Image 1 (tube, helix red, strand yellow):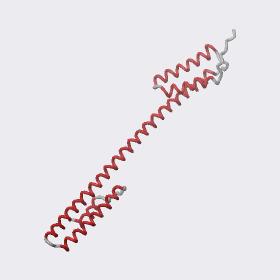
Image 2 (image 1 turned 60 degrees about the vertical axis):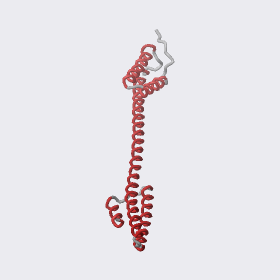
Image 3 (image 1 turned 30 degrees about the horizontal axis):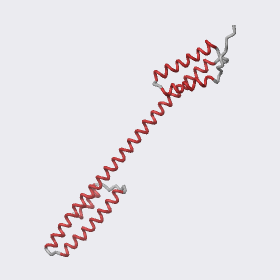
Image 4 (image 1 turned 90 degrees about the vertical axis):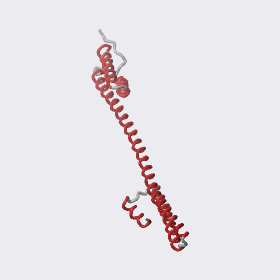
Length: 179
C-alpha cells in the first residue's frame, strides 16, 4: 500500500515555527505551552498519520517549533522588561524634575527671605536716621540697601540658572556683614 504524501516539505516547518513564535509571544505561559504542544502534535499527525515527503519532518519540526516558541517567549519578556524600564526612567525623570523645582523654590525662599529682611531693616534704619537728620548715616544705609538689592538679584539669577550655593556656612559668611 502506498501512503499518499501531502504537499508538506521541509519549508512547511517555517509556517509552524511562525505560529510557534506568535504563540510564545502572545500568550501567557500555560496557554503558550499547551499551544506549542498542540503544534508538535499536529506535526506528529502530518509525519506519522498522513505522511510527508521528508522523513525528518517531525523531528526537526518539533525542535524548531519549540525553539522558536521559546524565542517568542523571551522576546515578550524582553519587551515587558523594556517597557518597565522605560516607565521607571520616566518616573525617575519626573521625580528629578520635581526635586529640582523644590530645590529652586527653597533656594529662592532662602535667598529672598534673608535679603528682604535685610532690605526692610536697612530701609527702616535709613528712615529713622533721616527723621533724626543723620543724613550721612542714612546715605550709608541707602548705599548698603542698594548693594543688598543688587546682590539679591544676582543670587536669584544664579539660583534660577542652576547655581548651587555653597551651603549654610557660605550663607552665614555672606549674611554676617549685612546684619
